[in-house]
Image (cartoon, rainbow, N blue to C red; front, top):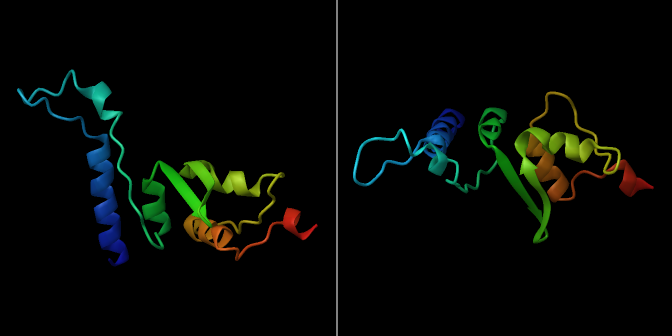
Amino acid sequence: LDAPTAYDVMKSVTYLADAPPLDENTDDTSNQMEKSELRTICVTVHQPSIEVFSLCSKVLLLGSGRVIYFGSTSKVVDYFTSTSLNYEFEEGSNPADFMVAIAGGGLVSEVDDQ
């Protein structure tokens, strides 16, 4: 998909994840809001733009079959740039590209250098 289409698709997926489910017997959604919080949609997005990445609430990053990070998309950069891991993130860069570089071994932290 091109970038605008990928954004539109992910925006629709986000809407589906947040929309309250309809009761099978009625069109009334007023008492269904708690159930909408239980909906999880898993997607694999290759080379997402910053805009598409920001639409995701959580991210699971795997490397060599192991979990490297699972958590909020808004905290992933802070996690990898923390003093314990010490990766360098260039301000304005795409967090998704940053994560892929880490998972693929393309970035080395200062901790690894020592």
